[in-house]
Image 1: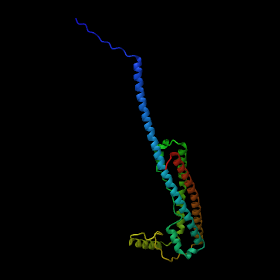
Image 2 (image 1 turned 90 degrees about the vertical axis):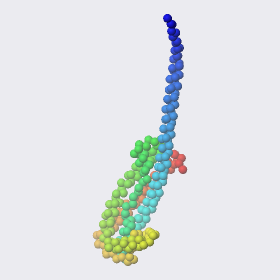
Image 3 (image 1 turned 60 degrees about the horizontal axis):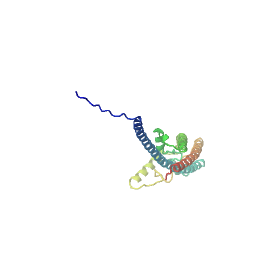
Image 4 (image 1 turned 30 degrees about the horizontal axis):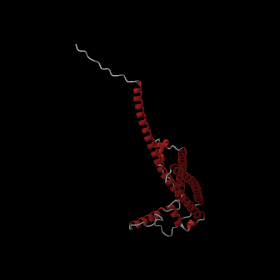
Length: 259
């Protein structure tokens, strides 16, 4: 009968299992830290990218608002001219000027179109959380709210434009408009350069306009005053928007060390 020898492996001490567990824990923990650091870096890079495009948007807004303020000031001067020639019946002598103002109505709608691509991405994509600097996020939200609130008043321009046109058109002969527009188009078609930057009509040098009734004249002058008042308010609003845009831009550049 054969006798089988049984080999016995010594039992491992508990410290061996402890060190195995510790090494496994450290490996998992280091992997977690590396992933966390990577995710943190990605979010930080995205934050910097958002602030870079936000700075570009704010620069664009500031430039657009500056042009808009200048345009509104210019149009107020033209409104003063229109008011003067109608109030003093000078349109009866210089009807051509009324047609020029009708062609480029200075009470027409001027709108501010903010460059809100970055702000929309921040709001709609839940990315506002990426803006770690509280003072920057507060400034961005404040600017966005101000712009949206002021845009609510732009509809008044359309209403006044409709009202004033109804009365100004009593001075305008559509046949003269059609003839002058056709003459300009024919002149433009035969050349390869821009014929004139001053208008889209080739108006005759002498245009006669019939006298307005006193009631229509007073109504038209009233609307001109209303449009001028509205434009003055819009200028103040645009100046407030421009000031805040420039302040927010300076803050973003400072906090994120942008060039």
